[in-house]
Amino acid sequence: MILFIIVVALIPGLFWLFYFAGKDRYEPEPPLFLIYAFVAGMIAILPADVTELLFKKIILNRYLYYIIVVGISEEFFKYLSVRLTVYTSREFNEPVDGIVYSTAAALGFATVENMLYMFTLGWKVIFMRSVLTTLGHVVFSALWGYPLYKTKMTGKKSYVIIGILLAALFHGLYDIFISSKYMVSIFIAIAIIVILYFIMKREIKEAEKESPFKNDAKN
Image 1 (cartoon, one colour):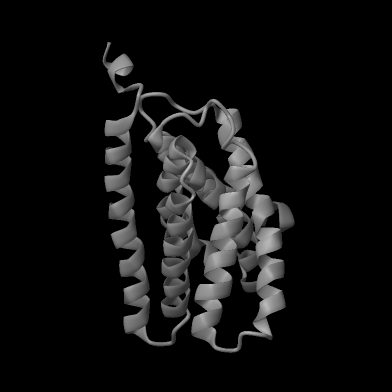
Image 2: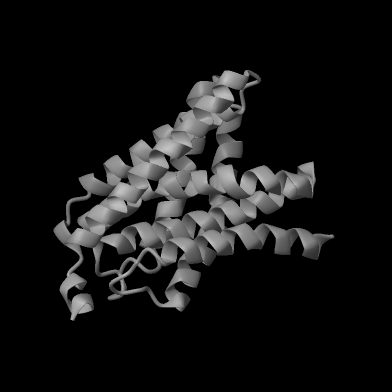
């Protein structure tokens, strides 16, 4: 059963990983580097969960808890999983790389999270989480992924700081709405993911326009 849950949880994570990696048209990232970010994202869930447990008894207001603790801790540790691995590599050399690597880290994080939910709630939860929640981690992290490249190129940390704070805000709001017992709140949570997904698609197009390898690919 354990092996079954691990395999089932890995399938959507790897599917989305290769799907979004394919968006890097001009200079695709080495698979090994994508795996680095993916595995680092898997590890990132440990400090994130510890942080959430430490603050759960301190911040009793669920709205503040989801935004300040869950949102910030999960997005920050996903960011660190990229910052401490592939960020300094020469492969991190075009705008879309920020989105691709943040996606890889987010999917690693979501994969372990899916495993934990499957162990506690049963394997059937993967049907909802493989699409909605897993994609949610991706679109939240994309909010700091694109700015991360700008920070690397300009040295201005404000880009990635603002990106992480925005990601934490939307992440927290999503958790608030998706955990509500009201159907309208669940629809709002879904709307957040859909809107952020289209924002991510626009960011990818903008990143492609800025790619230094765009002209090389046309030749």
